[in-house]
Image (tube, rainbow, N blue to C red; front, side, top):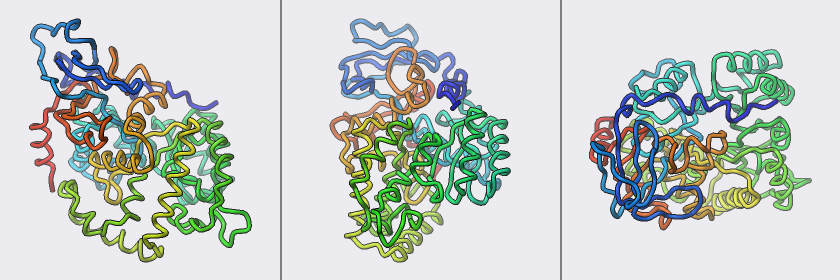
Length: 451
């Protein structure tokens, strides 16, 4: 028996935000983008009490409660906050509370109101609870346990113990990394089914995509495993020889295999977390110096930005990256994603922040842009970070859309992101579990968090 998504609801719902318990807020005259399907609702009032949306309707039909904080929505657009489904919260034992809270704040201040932490640690369980009460400025946290990889679970016994321990500790999910032997992976998956805990992440080379799907891996992050499974028969290299997410395989792909992989993915119930922006940055046309000049880099640790520059240059050199093979690789990933999406495989937005060039919170705009480059519409890209995520966790009545009863995770925009997805960055304010931060406060907090 696999874990029901609804079993994760306790962590998603939490309790009322301390900062929002007694507050009533009304967005008046706003255009609502409810994200239940592609539409806009003009000249609406949305009333929030505590951490819940209590009224949504035309201005003429929804009165503003006495004493409510009134926010002018004329010419603005209100939509759900977005989710980052491949996020990282500092896991290291040496990470300070200040560093962890800085990363969580970066997500929230950029309108990322739910994160799935993909490299968990015991401290994250405490932050999950504190985020739910509003004690710390943070998105709602869903967290995996520590990495399961070839070193942490080298044999069957260690795999069974790791799954048992992570379930007992209260982690929401388990994170799969490379290097796991197939027999060990199978034991991990069997134990996970028995104990009702899902597993997500990478596809180990010894396991392969089809086996991972058969065993119930819940998300395939980075589109991992697909290019390896597409290597043509008789090729001089095999999928098991993959390097850097299959970059070295781009000349040996047989796309006639793709429909069968799509069908297997659809049948398995797995979802895709693309993190396409990671690859667009590392393999794209911009130089490391140009990437380092992106405006959000001023908020990140200078030594790490310098490290990203060196790592990007080294990867391009060591992997033999040229403009031609890089473009063919990115196009192959885009083709795989479009085929999966068109078949109805769920997509969940995720950028892998903070990894190379992905500053937490800021990078969700980069991921939206990457989805547009891959051929998705603005609505489709935004749906990956809102309604799709809620439905994936069986929490469609809890968040992901603008409707009565939903958690008040909202973003107020100065322009319509359905016209141009870059308008996501034109935020007039963010509401996290009913806690309102306007543009001036967001800017002040970001300045305070700058290194």
